[in-house]
Image 1 (cartoon, one colour):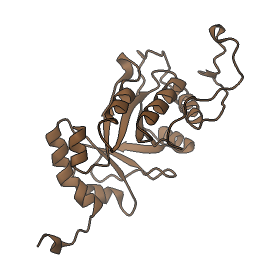
Image 2 (cartoon, helix red, strand yellow):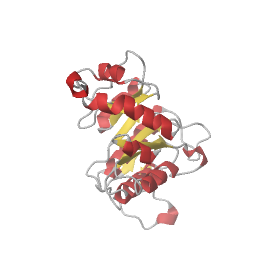
Image 3 (tube, helix red, strand yellow):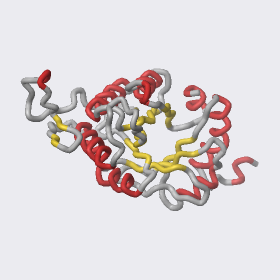
Image 4 (spheres, one colour):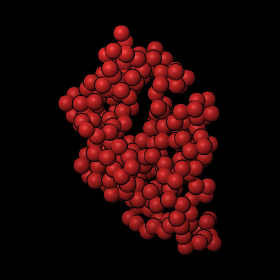
Length: 240
């Protein structure tokens, strides 16, 4: 499917995961896939199921492995069965994303909150410094990261921290507003068409992630979307 995505002129290929049964599978798969294709590779990650410093480390290692071609979409879908035992309250995700954003800057950080403490001050870690920094750092100065915003408070938090915002495709809906350097992202079904996506983007830009389950669906989406999205006013005389 990834090879077909390259042949179909897509800018990136994405893989998804559910961390309920393990840790790091999506980013590990993305890092491996990045060795096989020259385009950017993204990982859809269920955030909140393990410590944000571990997530930051996974992102950094994947990005270095891909020589700075990684992208990440975070879904805030922690369930009560989380292996990390985290709450589903907004306060947990607030702390999780603050620590993640701070760690990915490469700065030495310290955090003391209701749910998290960095450094942890666990007896097994002693002696420990008062601050710590992510090592290694990602290959990119800023890894493109989007948050799937299903509620207003998630949208606000993502923008506050400088993450992009993603939303599910709805007919007649709009691409989320850009956040700094990141355009809004729409998560689209396999049968979406270019005209509807251009209408959703309006006069701005949009990042469209299109679902596909087979190489044929990738190829079909490429024929339907890649050309029209890149040249939406393609001259008719070109095909004469």
